[in-house]
Length: 157
Image (cartoon, rainbow, N blue to C red; front, side, top):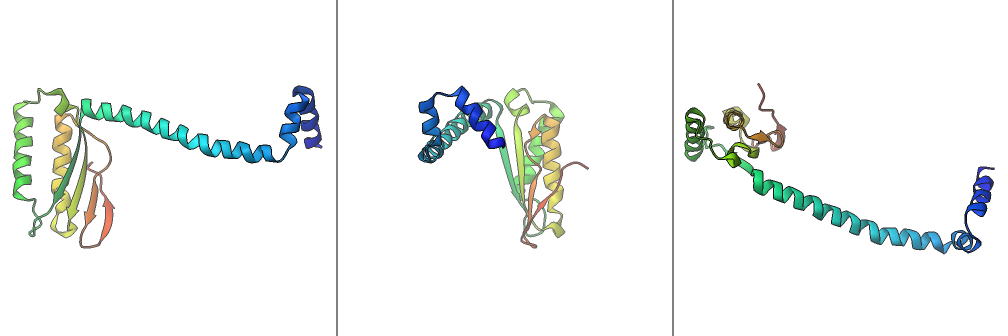
């Protein structure tokens, strides 16, 4: 009943030659093939457009990825201590005159043993970068090498 009403509405609204094309079975085959070609290209161009926007944004605002591994004793490596000292000096002297550094977006990837307290200095890094005005893209991604599984830990206390 519903299909008959729809067909009679199509008969009134569309010319006869269009109806013969629609009623022909190959029309839907060609139509889906057309969509199968056109839609991926539309998605590709949309992806390229959005990628270009984010690329320009990253060049202006900056994105930082911090990968920190533990030493054998569970403490942060020496170069990480130097980096923390430098961040602390920046915070204390308020030498953050560069807008790019203050508006940076960052992500933290921590790798180490959770028994050794490796989470501690990943939190310290996040807090110091927040103090400088940087914003966090995603929660820290922490991998426990002892458990061979991923952990998500928030920097918020």
